[in-house]
Length: 130
Image (cartoon, rainbow, N blue to C red; front, side):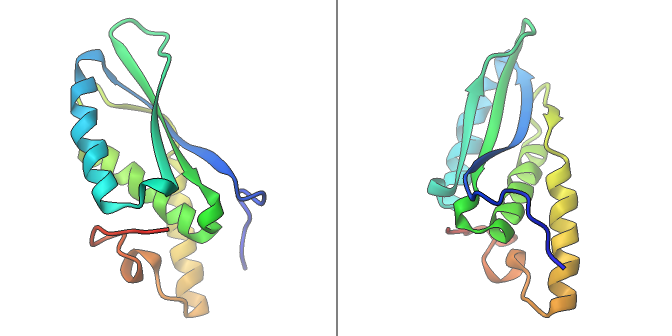
């Protein structure tokens, strides 16, 4: 059984988050590291307007043109990396559902006998390409 999150296969926001304004410099090495691990043509992290003083807003987007299954795993990977980065003042506003979707997809993969993308395509080990 499958599910369709983005049937048009276009870019979709997968996380909206804030950090302390003084943490913006910490975003650069995180994005650089992610670019070395994940094909940068498949994802973006963009600065957004933040309505709160002293805060910097960002959104993460994934290109669902790489395939819905891969995009779900990629979104979950980006979310996990954001949490691991321990950015000052990190607050996730939207996007936690991608971790749940990736877990659901892993269960579907296990039942169907498909290899998990986190194992076969490098999401866990570091290198992901679209």
